[in-house]
Length: 292
Image (cartoon, rainbow, N blue to C red; front, top):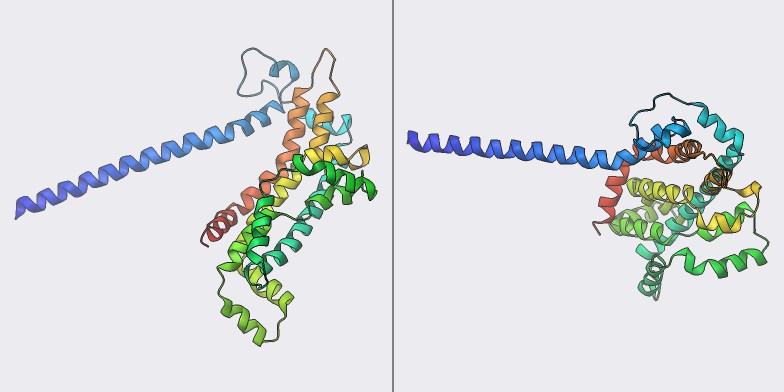
């Protein structure tokens, strides 16, 4: 009897040792993957604080020999970077609001609505996810040009006003909500708009945060369409401004990689801040959308 107890204790100790080794290995792997993912961002930040001469050294330095915070001031002095920031905020906010409105109501129709051909229409919406804007930008550009939308905020926003991804994510989440909530709301006198805004949307807060952050990131980092439709300085956005910042030194003996890095840090800062604030909502939102 004592021998069996000793053997059982030995097996438990061995299992604990294996679990401890596995946890250590898992932690080390997580740290390595995290460092690999964060290193490009770290390199961008420290490069933005270096001089151009230090950036071009044959042996790269992992820490600036001398900090040059004036690189950030030079970005604003060399180009109208504040204007680009303002234009990007207006464009991103317009895209975000329009996709939110169209996405919520379309998702409600595809999840809780009843109409002929609903599944077929939804498959068409999903098909739009596989078509990049590079395929459709010519007819879209011609329409915007005919409507006088070139070099306007409306021209920047309108082609991105509807998002198949937004509709898909919200539709999946709405389908997971029991219809009894909707029936109870109707008995209380709520109409469709009230059901959507006061019942469904609050119950899908995590998914709303997720798709909103993804939409914000895509709008903020948009380059191809703003490059085509924004012809002048007045509607230029950050991504185009960064390209122009690099081109200001084209053909010259010196370069401004340090200032380009500083501009890139300023450009991604809002996205990074929002991600760290709402990352827990993103994980919850993706898991809920995958349940249905």
